[in-house]
Length: 394
Image 1: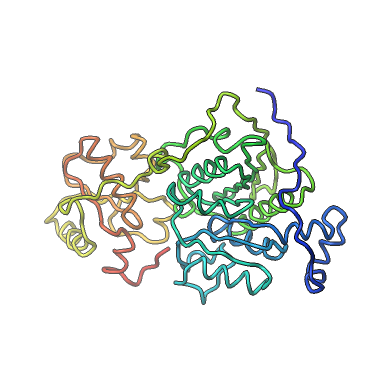
Image 2 (image 1 turned 120 degrees about the vertical axis):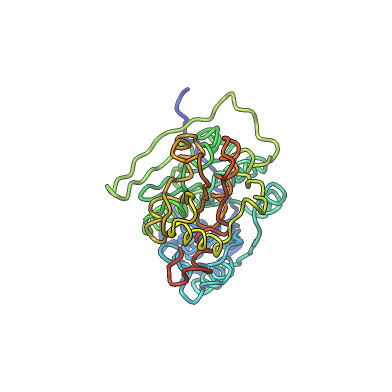
């Protein structure tokens, strides 16, 4: 397959009629750049950019979009600020813990630039609403951390003919690219199929180097501004990779698959990625935190024999753990690699952070022929809440 040749792209947005004297002063360092100038700044003023998530990548992206003078910024986020977010989600502060992220981010944007219109979409994006949400914007920035949403964003953007900037981070590694079906490759050309469910930990499971978010988020906004104003050469057809540990950037070229079928409709992305929630465990398959505490006490006294298996990642277990649990990460179980490490001759209880991963492992264990298995309802969060409240959560 021949390398993709990056096309010369026209500016994505028409210029707004004029800048006010205050805006001329505010954006003067852009206006005096010949490639941007007053016309480019008026294009930014007229632009409508949707940011997927006000989290690690959304935080610097939203601040730099606002600072650059993008006139309308949309935020899709239905989550709330947690203390553990503040290590990297710099748009939020301690005072925002417990608040909806979208509202916290809106206030930070307005504090930085009151000229920006902020639209909030406090919804879970799915196939039923993605096209409606995207239709009001010129460009999408996607920094989400799950494969189902990435494929959804890709397909909705392709159907509507819109470009989007993609960013991804994990531990010390970051990636950035531009996808636009009408002019070049899309996410599906690079990743035709999602990885097996559970094989790639999320940032919440595997961690992320906080400062990496700034580097990748700023690169995403750089691409957005180039698309809006028509300056420079975009990352369409290229993926930029950053290794924070070695402080090195490298690039790989990608091409459009000529045999790929056109994207014409949205689908069930949770099913496509194999991440649909496991069927609810029946009452006799769920263990409450107080019940597990009693079981552990009985095991300590030699009155009960069972195995407690923690299906989280090692880093999570180092923050907080349940006494007597043995660590076997979810990915090793769902791949089938570690079932021989799970006893069949006695009861097994799985647990994770909140109960979702352990429920998936429970369903897989039943399918694999394990009969005497249960899981901790609510996971470590329930354990800390109900049994050991002095322990930290994350």
